[in-house]
Image 1 (cartoon, helix red, strand yellow):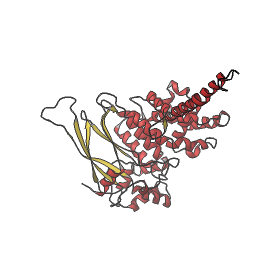
Image 2 (tube, rainbow, N blue to C red; image 1 turned 180 degrees about the vertical axis):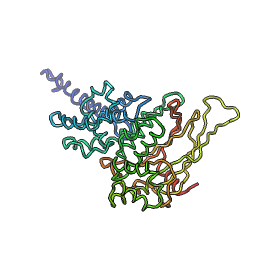
Image 3 (tube, helix red, strand yellow; image 1 turned 45 degrees about the horizontal axis):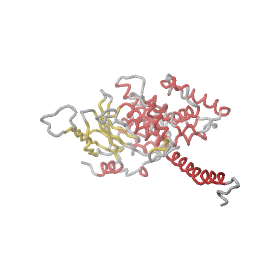
Image 4 (cartoon, helix red, strand yellow; image 1 turned 30 degrees about the vertical axis):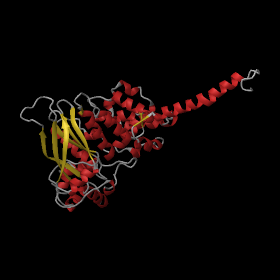
Length: 402
């Protein structure tokens, strides 16, 4: 009788029971569910980040635009920014990296971004340009939190770029290649401007790729790479082509490295991977009567080797594509241009990341070697088929040549 008595407390008790016994627990449950739904996939990336990536995605995204895309992640908005302490260090860092984001500065949205995203953009570029030691102490505490997120953000950005663009399941080629190329730049600390020279001639592009491959080696900076170029060692392939380790060590010492540094480079060269297309075939059922949009199977055999290893053959079969295209192979780890390399290190097999030497310039986040096979049509800017090569396939290619 006290609950619904005549003293007037009945309605208050009833409202309290409904509010605290039903509505409050329900509100907590709704908040928990909404908080859990903020993340997408197993990587724990915010859904808003995925929406930002889709909004910023362009079919012709160049290599220089990739850091901007990664920096708009919502995770970076939570990193604090102190105008009093970080404005001047940020100004100096932007001046130091000015040549690396000139294309992005033309975008009107760049000037309207939050300072947290600009800071993330500059710190990502600092890693790619091997300038982390020149980052001001006021920004150093943010360096590892920003860079440790890049591998997860890269995976999400790659999923966005591999989203089908038409009913045939084709995806855009240029953004995928730009992301894979920047992954190499970030891991190897090679500036994007070095990776992609301003000139468009075949000789200039080959020269840029060669210098980029030299810069991935320990202790090798632009000065040493330039000296090697003068010694007719324009790439890692040219360096490996020198017969005998003593000849390479002498070339490295003549380029300005000490005995210990040259020995480190020589040890690192044993693990440099190389992939070349051995054979490629395209087949379809009923080849006598083929029509447009018939599904075909592209089988690619790759020669896989490391350092001076003899070539091993890797078979990748069963990639269903529509129309024929070219082949493009991307590796997130160290990569070098194919050439006539020596055979000093026969028998070396890498079964996993524990068998590889530490990355010389990537100390703020964990990175693993990865390989991608892309069947592309550059004329239409489409990727017809793609596949990630797992560690088991790579190990099999090294152990069992065909």
